[in-house]
Image 1 (cartoon, rainbow, N blue to C red):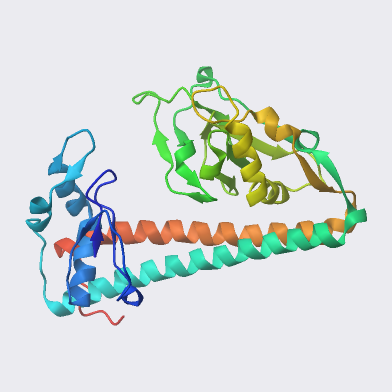
Image 2 (cartoon, helix red, strand yellow):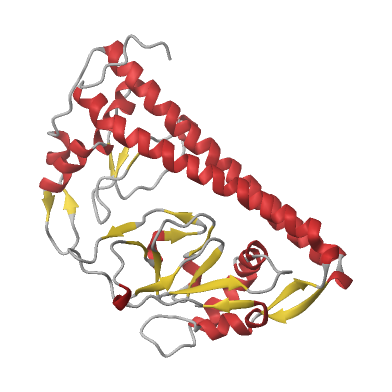
Length: 327
């Protein structure tokens, strides 16, 4: 099992058996536990609130936070009956495996969407025209004002999204917490968010099912189709192609700002293939269907992850015992 002990502390992973014999280079602590059950149990304890709390209390607050190996070895891990531990690990692993299956399905669905878009462009020259993005989409259409005084905000920072995956949404109550000054972009269903800072870091995503009162950082360009013929899914595929990202990164590196960045108008000037008429309805409907499946799997993973996180501390403490449950 690998544990991060420098920088981002406490992240864990089990090294797959398929890596045996490989020459691995690591910059983390490696805990060698031969027993597979115990290895997984220890990993889940590290991931639990109790394990994470222990790690936080034993950090060395140097220039870069570190966890010393002695503290790692002395972590008080609860050891339960083998049958009980086995059932706990089996239950938690089943949830993790389903989350991973959904993630792989989404990767496959997105790959299909990319291929379909590429084939449509290659075989349908008369069915589309190249137009500037600004002609078919609104960029940063809605801005939040603190005068609106929302009771709460669900905030997306640029680091919250990477390559279409939302890792974190900050729930902020402005009456008791400071709302970031950059929390200004109002997000609607289907909006495409594209970070204007360091495009090669791929902080972009399509927000199929936004939370209520969702705001995004002004570090994003918020893009929303204003043409009935151009769907947001097509815009997302165009803006996330490898060649396009490379082009935007080259443009960003020419900027005079503190960090390599582009302007929303740079995105607006980029030309994308836009359907001319109803002949592309099947193509558009196919893209929407694929992205709808991706969104459904993403929502299921959120629910499964929340279930796992709620069960984890209760299983670790023995508050819930599933040893008698048939799994």
